[in-house]
Image 1: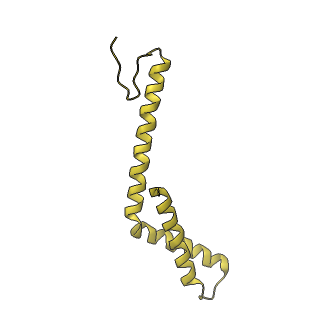
Image 2: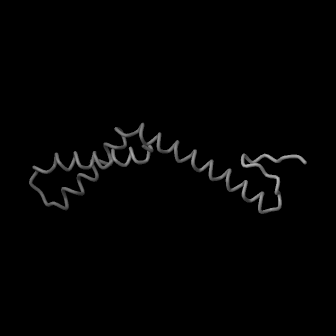
Image 3: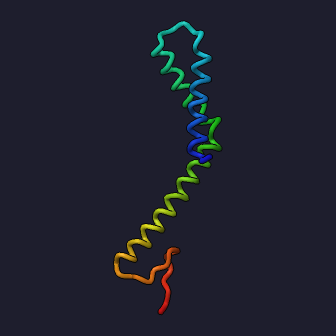
Length: 92
């Protein structure tokens, strides 16, 4: 399971837990939802730091792969027919 999915499920779980804790407090439903959103966002900043860092690392690696592929395709379109998939040129 990807880090982004784990982080998203963690955020949803925290929201549900905070909403369940506020469920028995007598207040307007809209206010209850807004408070649950605010409290769960604050808690996720501290409790889900590891998952957030994993997700950021995964996204950075994907961006690097896309950048390398884009550079390879640009060199191929520029007439460098001998470009290798890893971005290095062959001689000959």
